[in-house]
Length: 188
Image (cartoon, rainbow, N blue to C red; front, side, top):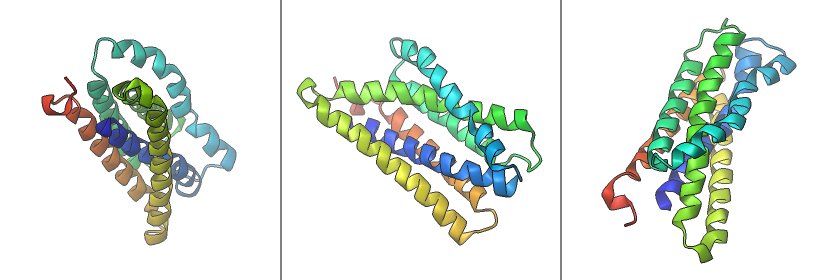
């Protein structure tokens, strides 16, 4: 339960960070209009709509810790590819990177929610749901704060720094997720 909560918090730091950082990246670094910047973000949420159709059936055969760990590593790779993306990257170059982020987050999100909620006793399911919501809100607030700090401390290039920090949180979440596979951390 604790590892699922920690993994969730890390992943939502990344989500909060990316949805605040991307408009700055697309508008002020890459020079796109507000409308175009909004449209360029679309591949991530569009991918997330489809991922439960793939991730949830896999949860019956593959541990949520493994799916989540791999998913968060994919998310980290997507963030690194965004951080190292050329300023003149085209729509397709942006879209595949965001699809990779969406696939990674999608492999993590549904299996982790199932793991977190099912690891609590039935009479504590309301509390488990509250912890999940608190992890989400905490993570998103931290992610947005990280972007604000990066833009304040490093006005030029702060968005890129934020993406690297997001990749670090994704890797940390992946470690927490993989720890759930270790015998000492599993419930017997």
